[in-house]
Length: 489
Image (cartoon, rainbow, N blue to C red; front, side, top):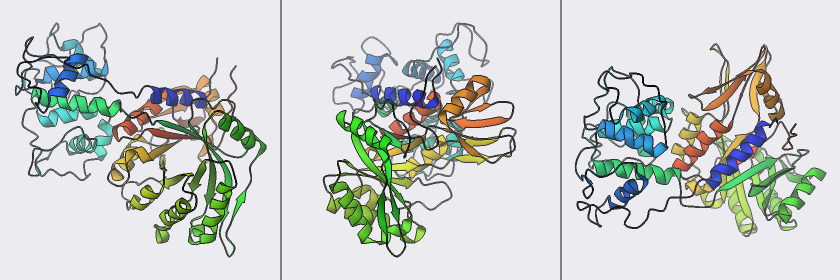
């Protein structure tokens, strides 16, 4: 049975939403004499013991204040992520003998990138420092490549000189904190309770308590939609705002979109009217009135605006949305926004974040044709990370969503870069070689004369994980160059 890229992404998107429930730690999961109930790390210690990430030093003592060893944290990480190494032993470090109690777990950490072989030894019995712990956490999440790019990111600690990118990421994700007076104290060893707290924080990031996961799908005119189950919101792109002397709203709803709207409405899904336009229309109050009237006179639950403001009227989009909010307070207002990128000015989205119900970030792809394999990465993970970190203090995570494209991007022969429909990507997968780039968290395939980059299940899961780390629980799947209807054979 052949399944298109869209089918795979849809299934994965819905599954990720289902799996995001939080862990409930049983009351009294562990009772350690050296952990009073009011201890600052008591809840995290109980969780660690209940989950089996690591136990106490004895049956009734946890070892509060004692250092976490490097070997002990490797074991805790492998248990936390459920990593298993193969049965065949091979030597990685000169000071890690075969048969050591921690060796299989350390091998699993090495195979998953949490541990690297920068020197010939591992020093398993040494206390792990706060810097080393942060580095292992970031590498365990698969963010080592991003950390290299984050070396120059702002960091509120004046005593960090090495692994600045890893520590910056761990701090930005809320996994580590300082020790006061703008200090991180990277060389101080991490205690067992500190390790427990950091693992507990990471678990809460990866398994958020909120249930407001929203999977959205964006359909353009003429796109078919056979199965929309699993999506909470359907966006029908049917409106265009035109500027000039007489700005106006033009609606063109296809028969297919009408059928989709009927089906989605009957299923209790939210249906939004998608409207695109140039930034010049934002200057007209008449256009805002026209959009409000279109919503009032229809059964749409709200609007999705895809209007990118120019540098000269950066505040106009927020004012436009505020005007709509006042005119149709009962309708949902979703807005597409270009995501911040490195080496570019960071837009001020605070006013927009207050006015809109949801901001859907559009992330630029990455193109590099100088290497042996041309790169046309879709929504690169490093770019998504920067956008989320840049907006972390401007917009609450629950108001953000990420736009993901369910098609490929690449080129055939020496032709110009172009989009490949999901069906085409699926057909090329069957006859070409497929690869995965950890740098961009993006899949790509090669045939005799074609290279195509695309998002597969692994790539989507990587983006879902990063979104959860920032408290973002929503994604929007777009198929601008293909149809949502996917035949199986």
